[in-house]
Length: 158
Image (cartoon, rainbow, N blue to C red; front, side, top):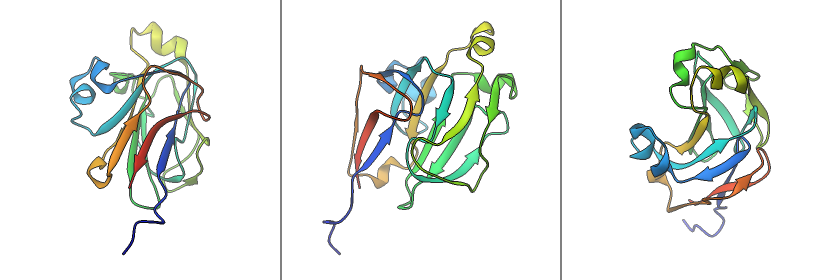
């Protein structure tokens, strides 16, 4: 009926690093928003946490990406690195399982940065709202140094 009580959705950094606009991601699937809208983080950390409260709805077999669905049906995808699926799980340790309820900041993945970087792969991490058409607005916070599990990177209104 009324939207007075709809709280805005805030998305925190799933990993430490510097926020960049999706258009700067050197992968057209993300840069052209084919997978959804959001932000990317040029990461420096090695722990990947839940960017919001919700339920883990997907963890890729290779451990390089996971999805969370919020209680109001917003679906978020965290994709650690570019072309990291090619590692077939090497360098990724999955800490939680599908259907687990998590709160923002809960560790989901641990990555071996040195190993992944030694393979010549980027650890830019897109944070995508897959069903962004359900949002009234989406405001990424670009060009900021962020700490995983602490700093807000996206503000969304439902």
